[in-house]
Structures are given as C-alpha cells and as structure tokens.
Length: 139
Image 1 (tube, rainbow, N blue to C red):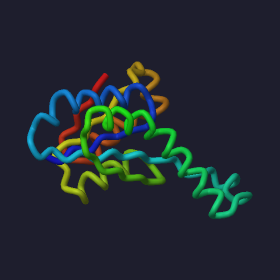
Image 2 (image 1 turned 180 degrees about the horizontal axis):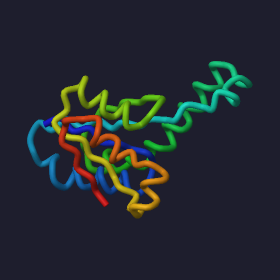
Image 3 (image 1 turned 30 degrees about the vertical axis):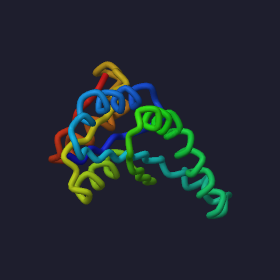
C-alpha cells in the first residue's frame, strides 16, 4: 500500500502521521511518502530576491515543516520518501497522489469550524474535490 502523508509542520499533520504508523505500517510493504507544499512568495516580494535566496527560503520552510515528522519516523524505524512542492497545496497533493498512484492520502485537520473554513478555505476540502484517491482526515 502506498500512502501519501501531507506534512505542514503542525500538530495536526503529526497526528495524521502517527495515525498512519499505528494503523497502516503494520501492513507489510507499506510505502510512505511525506509531502510538504510551500506557498509561493508574493510576486512583489519575490522581485526583491534572487533565485538563490528564494530557493533558500523554501528549503528552510521545508526543513522546519518536516523536522518533527522525520524524528517520529526515525524513532519508529520506518523508511519513507519525501516530496516537496511550491504552489497550491491541494493541487500539488492531488497531482502527486495521481502521478504516484497512491492508495491513500492522510491529512491532519486543524479543526476549524464551518464558518472559518468557508472564509479561509480548507486544504482538506480542496484535496477531496481534486482526487479520487481515498483521503483519511485525522483530527
């Protein structure tokens, strides 16, 4: 089973990772891939930075977001792959799930109420709209 786990550095994404470890890794041959998607820099800000600085900014964000997840997996002794993107998180997650022929996507929910979700949007909701791959949402 191939499982894609969305990691944004939040406690919610670590709960999703721990859920997968408890329920799926017991299955022999489970393949885990962590994905972190960084938002692109505002075009105005990006005009003041060179490509090296922008790449360093995104690399630092990736390291920060993945740090805890890497520790959890290392302590569990579980092998995994990593994937990174820059852009709309839902689009990138759904696209990788499709391209990589994943069997499941696991995501953490921040537990915002319906009103907040309507105004802020929800990456989970958008992923559900964009993929046919089963999505496990962990609160």
